[in-house]
Length: 499
Image 1 (cartoon, rainbow, N blue to C red):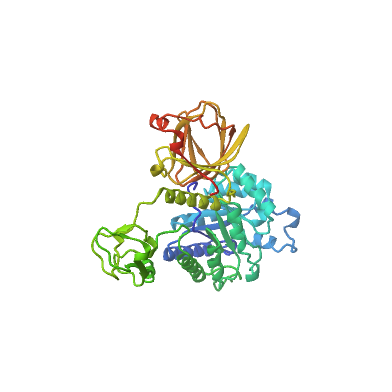
Image 2: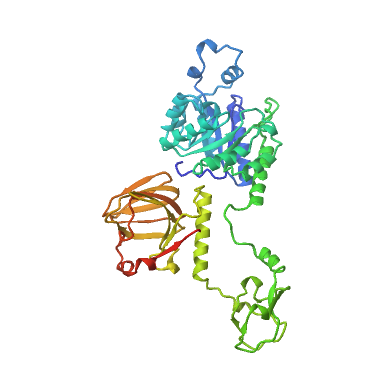
């Protein structure tokens, strides 16, 4: 399950709702599979594994003081019981998942080849269990109920150090959780703080509360977990678990929220929206008659509704339009007069806007007076194919600059005779080739490039990289492509001040 995508994953927590009754557990699994078929979601069915021989101290097995010990003992299952239910989950087309509460339970998890490991909030600080679970070589989902931000920082650092693919779950360990205790703003906080970690919502509110899942999605939750159960004549269901019908309504509420929120990226407007806006736009009309070949200035036109089909909008008006025929007063000018070839200044402006957007997204602040250099090896027209943006921070005996590359940009093979540089990827993706050897960088990774070493780099979705080096010299970049080498440096660079 290394390829598991956490986005829009629904986790159904069987917990102790099976009451230690395998047949009851199988019924819950069957009902959950019907909900999955009805809603079309990607779902995981989660068990809880406990080795009660070691988890509960022998002297306390008869204790009535703990609210959990007797329940755990009364609902105990054997490995062969879990295997029956795990097989049923797989047959239903769902992902298998389990929460181990001790190291021996991780062994069972591996024996049953469970797809995903879940770490409960109560175990998120259990170092021996985390050490063992991290060696299971499976994706992990970790709840953060009751943890301080310092403890979550430590947890994330531990997982990243152990190279575990994992997701964090905002969780409140109150059963059930009252509405004013849900703290759903924490989802957005976690996503902002750990931008490369999927963040979800593990919920314990009453099943009739369908607002929370909608708000959680809007706050950025990417996966969702809920306790499930089945009420029968023999077994009751607790206050925070969903029946199949409640589970179905919960998922439908999420799907409704997803539809309302739309995509996270800005997509083109719908045809209906464009038509609606055009109905309120002004078109360009002639104020006075013009003969063919004469020039229209702004004093010769006026802007008014309605905007007619094929008419030039006021937003595309430019002085200097030459009449293509004789015009009388009050006639519309056609959109063919629109200048769709952007000026050099407009091209640079649009590039800088995109760069600013990337820096804002990555939370990398830059002063407006920092010198900016657009490097366009084959001219500004091909900048989005070959090039990058440099932001100079300091250049002394040591040098620091930021390198920003737009999606799909490439920087061709070159070397520096004097400069030694180290790249550190701050945001996005980057692949660097040194002397023909590729290295894929992930955010936080560093890479040393020694003087005289041929290197090139490219990005798929865009990148922000920090370069730390010895002193930068303008005559110290030597390119493999002779075409680039023949172009004077001032023709390959555009400097921008006070951007």
